[in-house]
Image (tube, rainbow over all chains, first blue to last red):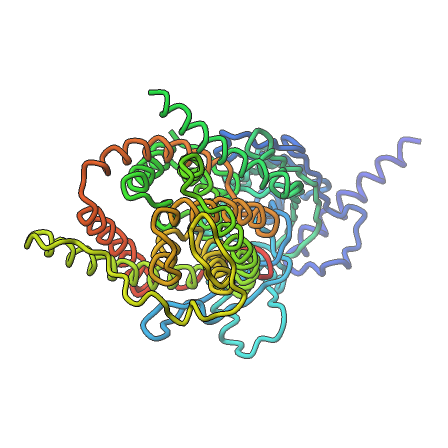
Length: 268
Length: 306
């Protein structure tokens, strides 16, 4: 009767030992083990309201590794990357050049469905984590930037992609924090991502990726709703949802201001 | 103290905007102009997107033209019939202008087009005005009588068909040049965010030979309706009228204008015109510099596929 659980735990220990030994030569999905590593995450909030005095915010993401190997954890073979992706939209990059002495937008390239904002945090440099895994679109340097329409010159593509990344990083809408994910205990981690002051509203996606020795093991995602509140947002909503009424109000304010001033100053 | 502009999508210092509105209001009161041609470039210099600057500038002109128009209407120096014909052209022009505006925006050439148009227009008007006022000042210093030159009573403009009688202006004039003038001004209103008085008034006096006493009132009548229409169409098509920015500018502007009028009454006409010409040229020069100087970054990003 007692033998069965003992045997089971022995088998488990053996499996883990085998796993640890072959970790460097791990085949991605062929592990002959019952214990595949997993990942669970939770965020400090699922909704962020942006009031008029919003100066940016921090989002904390907690997560736990399940079925992680203690030994591999100890020697830092697990890596976690957390991203926060804003709503997707087209983006156009334009380049100026001199035409008859004047600077004119002469070339442009439109990228399809790129996130309006993008923050990434990781346990270390993304390039070190992704070393063995080519083509994963994680991080500002690797994210998918596919141009719409025909691109004549492939050299241009790199140039425009680089310009796009540089401008977005400089504007604060894209940011990365390598080292922003920290293990707080052997299997619990904590990441904090920064939402810039000009973060777009809409549904953002928190994504967490678990890597073991450069191989992607698990992926989790959670939505984060960013709602702008306050008078500014009401004005923006009105301008987009009831543009005619909004225009009429603008004109009425102008008429009343002009007329009011002439009344007030005439009395004096 | 900063205030967030919801349509321009940036935070600005409220005192700078108030100061800008008051200064332009002061100048517009002093020189008797709407001020759109000053406020729009100033907003662009302060990093407000040109799309928003133009649309908001048009809204601001509504406010600065109202009190003047009311005054002229009371005094009877406003020809409503002539103004209505001008207005028909103006509304057509503004509609065409908005179409051009949206198209230029879609191909990414709007900012450039606005800047070039400002440089050309302000440069030309400023040079002509400076030339004229300097000559007037010289004449005044030599104590020669100042005469308004009105050569030849009839030009080709007066041989056009569809003649109409404008009782208040006491003229008999073809509707074609009136509608055409209104149209051109309408285009300028929607593309540049100006009332266009600084072009319309000279054109009415020198080209159409409309008596000077009704010219200012009638042009203000046209300006109010065309700028109001442009504001609404800009709001409906480009979502680019910033109500917060416009309100701050308008309030500061109408107050500044009251003081400007008082100062303006103390200065002589040709001195005023020379000063205004210098101001117009300075704005044109500043815009010309931005076109020629190498930008800090050759690349720019905009959201959306246009």
